[in-house]
Each structure stands twice: as structure tokens, then as C-alpha cells.
Length: 399
Ligand SMILES: [Zn+2]
Ligand SMILES: [Zn+2]
Image 1 (cartoon, protein in one colour):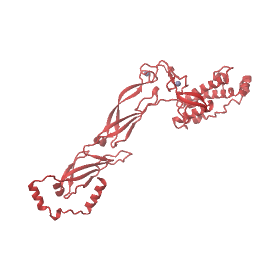
Image 2 (cartoon, helix red, strand yellow; image 1 turned 180 degrees about the horizontal axis):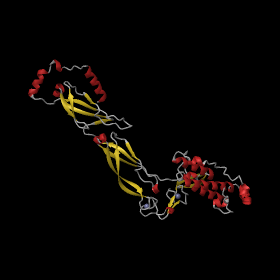
Image 3 (cartoon, rainbow, N blue to C red; image 1 turned 180 degrees about the vertical axis):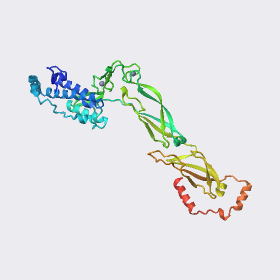
Image 4 (tube, rainbow, N blue to C red; image 1 turned 30 degrees about the vertical axis):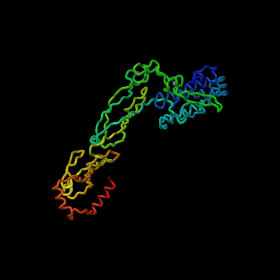
């Protein structure tokens, strides 16, 4: 093992440093090098952070203890041999680096808790505001209007949006030189200011956004002129979106990473597209099924005929049986909307054609005479058979 460095040197303080100075020095090192803050870094960076933090923790555990400090001052490392190991942390670095920290807020809370334990509060909100601030770009919400025909086939749409993009002049850093990006000296990168006030109820601690850095936790020296140091610029772009067949009004599609770019090369937000289905001139849609109403003349309904019905995939002929009642519904299997995979199933819906019978409002003298002649014929007397009763029951339910 390499020669141990002097504990004062490790913390970067002089031999005569006060307890407060020692504590403050260790706090700075923790804020910068705590492994929680480097979980997203390269293996090399992680290793480095772990070593620096371990060394500082050991130094602090000795120098913050008056007894141990006295021994160390007198006898050096030999005086505290075996007592230098931090007794407070017992941090399992494997756990921190090994992925047992699920979410982002997980390690944020972890570090805040650690700092709060060590330094008595003030590090982030309880429950874990992320300590290492990553600036994820916001999501963008937009909507596309689609005709039923477009939905039936699926369509590629171009959506025009204005979004933040990484500044090309500074590669999203906010400044030409990486070294000009510094941790805010005012809030030490937390983005928050702590205000302690005394009142008759005791001490009150309030957190506000850091006035120095506006809550970003960063200080950008020599900010890039194109983006003002934010690392992002506004741009109108057109995004191609593949809309699958079978979507429905009110559904939302997510285009991952097509939203705003994050500040300082933070992750991109998503583009959320709300589907708006335009009303169709003659089809009504319910899920995968389509409904169409066809009006027959009295004579066609009585004598039977063949009519042409429009479909989304071309029109087709439908036979009208003699004696078709008003309200009769014919189901044309498979001529409805396509299903949406994993959502409404893969098969097509049906097209329902409802026949209504139109009664003439005005009749000529001849027509009247003709009809008077057959008015009392047996076959004109309403006679609901079983099928008709079923039909009328159905009509009550559906229409
Ligand atoms: Zn600040
Ligand atoms: Zn820039």
C-alpha cells in the first residue's frame, strides 16, 4: 500500500485549522467527490471519486474527533493506526455503483440524506431532490388531425415544432471551453439557498432557489454568445411521425427524444402527439366498427333492390331484400377499421349499414288514388313477425 498522505493535506487545510474549517473542507470534498455524484460517470471517474472520498472520510473521521486529532498531531498516522477508518459511513461502494440504485431520485435522496446526517440538514428536500442536477429537456405536446381514411391506412405526418436544440457553436456546453463550466460557488451546485431565521417558535429553515445561479447549480464563465450560456438554441424543425393504422381520437403517441434538448447536453425530452380524428362526412366510428346510414325509398324497401354503399377501401354493392323494414341493420364483416396492434387487436372491425325508409311527403292525385286502392289490402296491415320484433328491440338499444 502506498504511503499515507497527511490528513491535513488530504482535506486541504493547514495544521492550525479550526473544527469549523475542517468540517467545511470535508463538506466541499463530499459535495464534489461523493460516489453518489458520480454514478453516471466512467469507471475511471468512479474509481477516482471513490478513492478521493474514502481518503477524505478517513482524514475527517480522525481530525473531527478531538481525541484522535490530538494523537494524530502528536504521533502522526502511527498514533491513530486502525482508528482512521470512517465509523460513520460504512458505505458499500458496490451498492452505489452496482445498480441497486434504481432511479435517478434514488441516489439524489441518498446523497441528501448522507449530507444531512453529516452536516445537519440543508441538502435538498426530504424525499430526494436529485443532488447532481441533470437538466432533462421538457416534453413537447402537439396534436395531429387525421381523417378516417388516413387512420385506416396509417400515415406518415410531418409535425412542425419549435424546440430547443444543442447550441452548435459551443456543442451544448454553454461556453467554448469546458473548464469555464464551474459549480456555483454560492450554493455549491445544489441550486438552493438555505435561509435560517429565528422566531419565537425556534429555528426555521427555508429553501429558496439560489439567487446566484438561478437554481442551475452552475456558473458559466465566458458564456457562448449564440446561446447565452444555456447550451441550447431555439429552432423550428419538422419531425416525421409514423402514425400506425387504427389509432383513435384522444390517443397519445410518444416520440422518444424528439422533445426539447436539455440544457448543457442534458437528456432530451419526448414529443407527445395527441391524435385528433376529424369527423367523417358519412361514417360514424365506434372503436373498430363503422356505421353508415342508407335511406331507401318506400318502393325499394318493399320490392327489394341493390344499393351502392361507400367503404373506406372503395364502394361495394349491398342487396336490399324485399320487405326491408326501416331500421334494418346489415353487417359487412371486415369492412370496418383496422385494429391497432397490442391495443384493439389485429383484425378489422365491421361496417354496419342501417337502412331507413323514407316516406314521401307529397303525393300526386294519381299516386293518391293508386294507394287508396290498396290501402286496406291485407298485405299492408302491420304484422310484426318475430324477426321484426327483434329488430325493433335492437333499435331501441342502439339508436
Ligand atoms: Zn447557485
Ligand atoms: Zn452556445
